[in-house]
Length: 402
Image 1 (tube, one colour):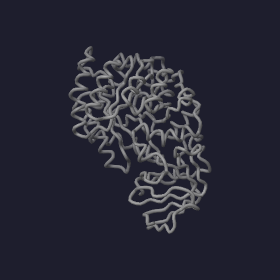
Image 2 (tube, one colour):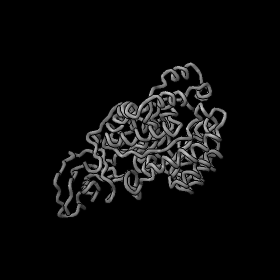
Image 3 (cartoon, one colour):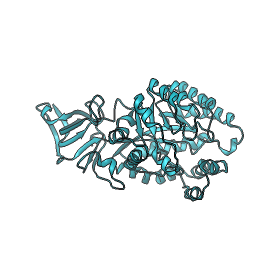
Image 4 (tube, helix red, strand yellow):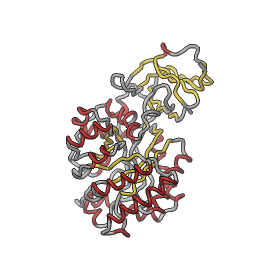
């Protein structure tokens, strides 16, 4: 068998399902051809003869799948440091939002920025993720809240994928907040989202999925359902910001619509968990927002675990509630604040994150046939990737075999 590249003399954490824990292989080999893995397993089981144009000695380093950040709001302009100060002085997130701050302050700054300015502002955030071994990132819109400005955000997300070696999944989040021009008319705005914005952006190929913010300061279940119905007509899968600040039954609605994921989930109950488990909807946990907002209600990790719901972890990178650009730090926060295990955290930023994006067939594990996205680490054991804080042990990042 001929291949383009072989990584030898490595420890593998394959993250493959059906294996115990992380799927560890102590003396492992990964071989790639045309950007795909053709073999990932023990050196003793490697097909012979296996010839490669390039052979790389990993010197006993660890190889994992490339990391996947499955929930970000990476493309935006401005910042909300002033609101951070307000919260430190006792003002709540909801109070800030209702006074015209919060998401709407970022909307004003993002609307004022050109596509080139949005790309320029977002590249440092993306580069920080890539420097930690991220090879796939989801980027949501939702700071434009009009067809013109949502299109600009999504075009900027696509441009980032051209400027960097990374896979970008773009998600249309038009139902993120009520724009000022629709003040007092949320149903009219949802009509705009569902009947004009979403179909147009889908036709233009700018969205891979659709999301909504179902919350007291966001949109109702009925309004969310209208957006999901429009997504189904456009042939797009859905995701949902659900049960972050209150129990709205959003997770059940999302699961009934075959959602890829329900995200946040601090107020998720047993009924929502059962619905997600039955539908195969992943839970995306966002400990950065939990930490930054100083929340106290922890997502029901034990119940999700018992129900077999895949638990992904993401940065939720955004200017207001999680200005976090370290997926390794998100994993540490999930372990320390949510009491997730090391195995759950590492699967959460690889295999489960791929499932949350609908990409489990192509990325997220080290298996033959999958895209050769790798992270190679200077560590003695995988637990270091969760244990350390503010330390980046990445040795090399491989995207599509290169």
